[in-house]
Amino acid sequence: MGSAEEAGKAIQSFYDALEDLLRGRGTASMNEVWHHGDYVTTVHPFGHWARGWTEVWATWEEGAAVFATYQGHATRTDIIGTIHDLKVAVHGDAAHSTGVYKSRLYMSEGPMDLKVNCTNVAHRIDGVWKLVLHHADQAPPEWNARIGKMVESGRS
Amino acid sequence: MPLAEFSPAEVGTEAGGFRIVGTAQGVLRMTVWGYWPQDVVRTFSSDAPSALQKLSPSGTFVLEATELKPQGADGQEALRVLFRALAPLEFAKASVVASNALTRMQLARLLRECSLDGRAQLG
Image (tube, rainbow over all chains, first blue to last red; front, top):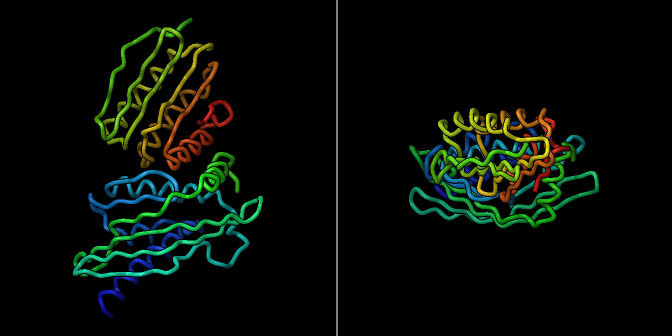
């Protein structure tokens, strides 16, 4: 397997881990795909930058807590979200990717779609590609408001 | 009985900390920011419930969290200590203000867990 393919696989693993998180299957796979270093950073469709593994991990744990109140996946078999048009470029032990993440949540009022541009950076550390940066565009205010309402009410 | 005015004591650093201010007008304001290290968690868990005892039934409580980042397990527990101490008290108004959407969701969840979701206004 070439470097680009390996890096691409690592980045796809991140989106698989995100699906696990959204579906209430835990955060172990998300923990696994990241480098646990002081220089890692992330920002989600909701919220501000988190810098350093401690802060980054707190946001993923909170993301899992947010989606623990989402019940729409209970009766669905399709994937909640996928990355589209994923392009990966490798330069030595660093790789970056661009893509468009699209998701659909089934809320009590009906489907709610999200489409955001995403950027990722991975580093090859001790021969293993690990995510060190994830960026997703901010979601539209109405999407954020609906997710916030879900958390406040405790039901989707 | 009006809240006795007291000078703010700032705890922590720019990266994470808190400040508690009481005014003679009966407003108890806790300003919290950043990501809390262990020493800030410990001090907040002690200072915040103590300060709440100065809140009168006609008083207003404000948690100003516009610069607070989502907290890890220990920081969340410190916030639960605050909310659990607030829950049995009588007060005129309680507000929790956050600008980071994920922090706001975390605070909303913690308020709900501590049965304060109907009594504290989340803005």
